[in-house]
Length: 221
Image (cartoon, rainbow, N blue to C red; front, side, top):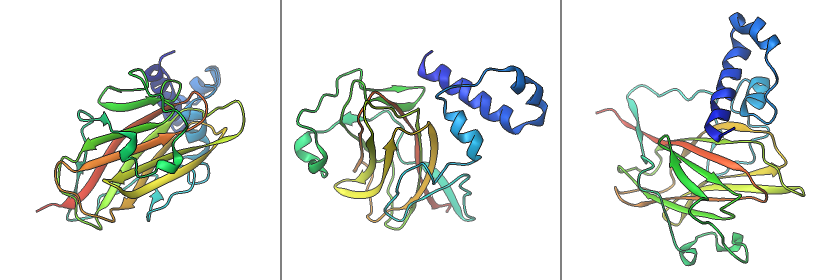
């Protein structure tokens, strides 16, 4: 089953879990082992229990509401992702002895960034900012991962940086069930259009991650 088939099946399971009209169908359907839905349905939210530890004034959000007077705009469109040199890594102490991230390690599918750690043991990716971001702006991130597995207990690390400045990060214990995280954090530095938005990701084992959206709230006028 492809990753996107799994996503479709997981979303269907979530809808069924919360719609009484689907109750009889759910009883007749097989369980989705290893799906995001298994975790989401039991928690009814973007979990802050098994979602790892967030820093940078970040908080998992089950349903982020846009405040009056602000609009939500895309900070990236996934068209400009590219690798950046390991020598420029602001988190060099995390690097493995050998970085192996070939063409199969990350790619854009359905206008979303997918990373497979089976082919990318240490992702160093950056994307030019599509718009200006003022320091203190609220940034919204949606990140998915499927079941995280490894031969031995380990830890996954995901971080978002603006240039060299860490904005948000999470550490997730492995093994962990699949999960959807909707995160809100405050930018600690300003960005100009074209400045680097960086994604840092690594874990042990062969796991799949999806960065769906990275948006910012800006004044409507």
